Length: 369
Image (cartoon, rainbow, N blue to C red; front, top):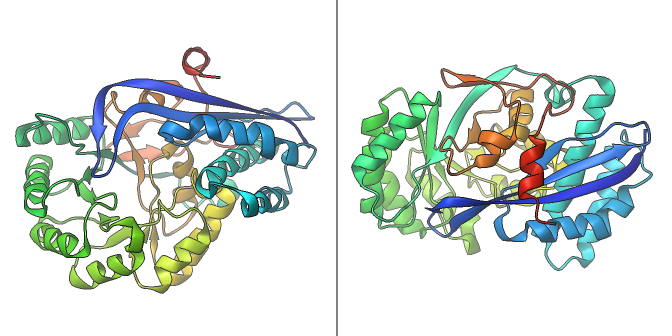
C-alpha cells in the first residue's frame, strides 16, 4: 500500500470570546485536516494542531514540500518517510512550523496503518489501557471575570464529566493568580484534579513565590512556569524550591529537546505534543526517554491524538480538552463520533487508526483554502 495523494485542508473557526493566557490570546480555532489516499483506496481522516496564525503555512509546506516526498512510499515504512521529511529541516526557515507539518503527514500514515490492519493506534503502540482520565483546559483571563465566575466555570466542568482542570496562570502577580486558583479549588472540591499552567509567563522568582502560595491547594502540576529564553535552567530552580511537580515539553519540537529537559532535572512530567513535535513517530521516542527516566507523560491538548498515545503506555496520565463549547468548536462539533465521557473518564476510540469521523458539512464551511 503506497501513498497516492495527500490533501491538507486548513480550518479556521472564529470564536465568540477572547480567551487569554499569560502570553497570548485566542480569537480563532484553527487546525489542519489531512486526508492521505493510498493506491489501494484507503483514506486517512485526522486533524492536527491548534495552530492559530500559521495553519495556512503548514498546508503550504505539506502541498509544496512534504507531500511530493511521501508520495509513492509504503505506509508501512513510516520511519523512513519521517526521516525523509525531517531532512528538509536543515534548510527550513521555521522548524517549528515544519515539524507541525511533518506531524500531519506522520499522523495520517499511522491512521492508514491502523485502517490497513484493522487496529487502533492505541493497539499499534502497545494498548496498555482502554480508557483514561480527561481534564479540561480553562481558567482563561477575560475582562470582567470574577472569582465567582471562576467558581461557576469549575462547576460547569464537573457537570461536563471532567476529572479536573488545567488552569491558566502567569498573567498576573503571583498573589493575584493564587487567589484565582484558590477560588477554583474551593468551587471544584478536593476530589477534582487541579493543575496550573503559566505558559512561560513568569521569572523563576515569581514562579517560586506563586508555587509556595498554592502548595496547600493540592496542585497536580505546575506547567511551563518560566520565561522561554532559559526555561530549562529556570524550571530546574523552581522544581528544587517546590513540592508541586513541574511539567513542560509542549514547546519542544523534537525528542532531543525533551532529553535536554530531563538531563538538567527540569521536569517531573513531560507534555510533548505529537501535533507539534513531528507526529506519533517522534512522540514515542520522547515517551521512551521519559519511561527510562521515570517521568510521567501528559500531552498538550489534542485529545483526538493523545487518547491513543497516553493510553498505549504505562506512564500516561490525562487527556486534555476544552470543555467550554465556545473555546473549541472542533472538539465539540466537528469531531462527529467523539467517545463518551463519564465520571472523568474517556473511552479510547476503538475504530481502526485514530477512529475519527469528521462532520463534513463543518469541514466545508470552515475550510479557508
